[in-house]
Image 1 (cartoon, rainbow, N blue to C red):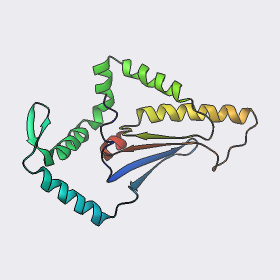
Image 2 (tube, rainbow, N blue to C red; image 1 turned 120 degrees about the vertical axis):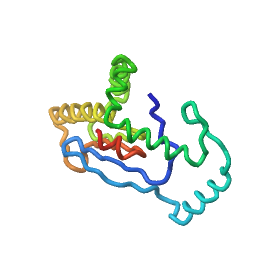
Image 3 (cartoon, rainbow, N blue to C red; image 1 turned 90 degrees about the horizontal axis):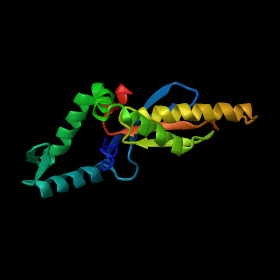
Image 4 (cartoon, rainbow, N blue to C red; image 1 turned 180 degrees about the horizontal axis):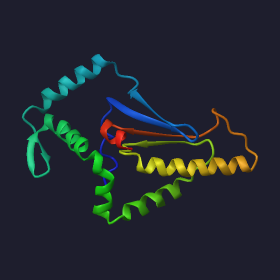
Length: 166
């Protein structure tokens, strides 16, 4: 499944932050740096340069400037069944891949994990469980963890519908 589906967009992203011990919070994160005027100017110049250009969208050619809106629409429509579709298309093997990936991340007490283009957060929730386990073990070993030293998991995706499903 394409995990890098939204990495190229650097405008406004919706992010979800989850602490290892608190409930999930939603927050809007805006790209730092470029002002809105600079972004608007850049978008206008980009749109002018791409007028008449075609892009592939499935088996059809669409206007280059329309492709982003069409892709966003697809993910908004499939968001409610995205994880089930992954199950069907991979015969459930995607769960093994994700579990393997999380085992290689090596969660440890106090870590921060950022899942970019995280979709419904299926990997992030696995990392969160591993982080909670690591922090429980750290506390059993005598490490003192508080609100400042506990780890957190952040999921970011350009499509709010995907985040809402998670």
